[in-house]
Amino acid sequence: MRTTSRGTTQQSSAPYNRRVVLDFIRQHGAASRKDIVDRVSLSPQTVANITNDLEAIGLIVSRRLKVDKTRGQPPIAFELNPDAGTAIGISLEPGRASAALVNLVGDIRARSELVVDTRDRRQILAGMLELVSQLRKNSRERLWGIGVALPGPLGANELSFVGPTALEGWVDLSVLDELRDITGLPLFHSVDSVAGALGETLFGEAKSLNNFFYLHFGLGLGGALVENRMAYHGASGNATEIGHVPLVPGGRACYCGNQGCLERYVSMHSLAEAMGVDDKQVWTLPIEQLLDASGDTLFMRWCSEASERLRDAICMIENMLDPQAIVIGGSAPKRLVEHLVAQAQPLRHSVRGGLSSSGARIVLSQRQVDSSILGAAVLPIHEMLSPRLDVLQPDRRVEADLAELLGHATHR
Ligand SMILES: [Zn+2]
Image (cartoon, rainbow, N blue to C red; front, side):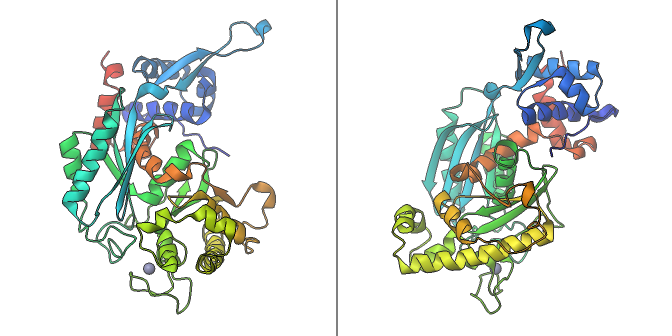
């Protein structure tokens, strides 16, 4: 069910074709020149030039495949070179900043976390600089850039930067420009749900899914719809902000001004409220013990309500968007999410319900602890690896990055 991007013969398409080839190799783990030629609609000569270039700049490595001895010279397979570089991912949630250094194949090389007052711009900038400087010490390879994932929605709309699950008090994102200027590194940012979905697409459970909905279960609740490995953004870039869909008539008041929003029932913030602790303490709750003992009334009541709301949300997502699967990730403890999903069974009837033979309706991220951070680090890597058609209508910044990235190859 994978889609393969196809090459193009347009003049301005060289960087695009390099990305198509790079992405094909990434998706398939190991690919021979013949595999690439057969699948991406580029001539054997173009593919040979591109693989030579990518190998020369160290982004891919080649090795001879073992095959049956009687069939002559075994073919050469290309693989991504995990040591070709790293990126730093920073995930911001109210009250804390978590970061990791990630290589080209999604391995986490080092991690760091800080408690910061995210309402104070000076403190958050200092915190992010400290994380970058700590992680930079662990990177001997080229550092591709920094990705920052932050809770949505973003931009100047009435839901942005409001309430305890958003970065309250942030009027704009200029602090990220300061981070870029001080570090001198390319910087990308995204809503955490979209970043998490990209992480799952490149390195996780959604690697072989063409079409899926990613549910980001963290302090708040977000979502992203991915089709053909691209997130659907909507008119203002804030599509699928599922946490603020009112699902409970006359339900709990939400800081967005509505009542009964999904996030008021399914989020770590709602768990904190139910348990009478603050958002910082919710991360230190003994979730495993609470689940094993199943004797804490407040906790069990929250679980039962959250799983019921999750059941409704799954039905809504499936009927609206018909994804191949719903992938759940985010910073919430994995055991807790597993429990809620189990408790949400049997799932409601939906357009997906009848397709029982075509795979699981719900898939849990196996990288859950790291998914928001990994997702953030993916942003600079994704920028480099993914073929994007808009590169054909030159986006100057992307073109410049690619020219620099591929400079060695193009200026030989
Ligand atoms: Zn709301």
